Length: 282
Image (cartoon, rainbow, N blue to C red; front, side):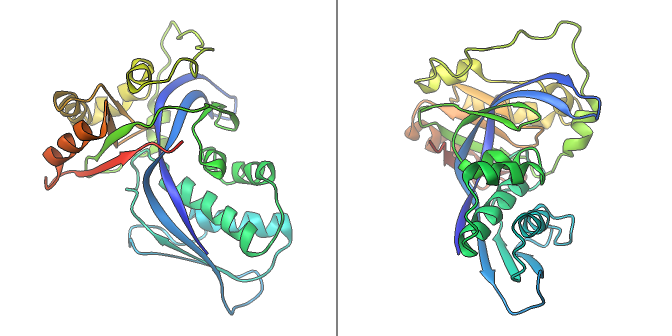
């Protein structure tokens, strides 16, 4: 069984606080995009409860710390399904980019195992199970634009966002999410809650007006090249540019496909970056 595992972008990301256990409280608007991995979930002959994970990218860790491996184990524990399962990942989402590559693969594995073994878990069941694997994983169960609060577990549909044509740039180096959050410092005056965030987002220009990411100050402080790439996207006609998640990837939102394609052509072939032409999924 093959599944598409989309990357995500954060169109809005504010840090609202921190829990006693160290987890940061977020308010973020996320959208899945057409860039994604391919995840294949199959049965194989092996010992009961065996899990194997393979990837075409040698940089992907395949042991028990891998999010897909953890997801498969969590599924087995939840359902008492002991059939051996193999998960193969065709990796296209860059790692350490803030695009949710590990989380989306884990969600795809959960969805695939639920169907393959006819376990009958509901979407809500899968989202609850996904949260035990990682804070971003529940978002990818439905794979639709959503606003996430708390540590990412409080999801609310964002409705019908417009299709956004994007140029996504990976600068060639990963960023540690843990390092970024560890070094985030709250401002003395916290931003007010935007309770109407997902209203009146009917056009790309309206989306661009709400784009903000509190984590940029941390990541760009150490990696100024990210700011340089944002500026280049703006110079090539983006109506808004932003770092996704904790970085390192940045993306530009364009008014239409033609403008996005022209900007993408300007980045294609550069040695130090990987550019992707993509669009948001609704």
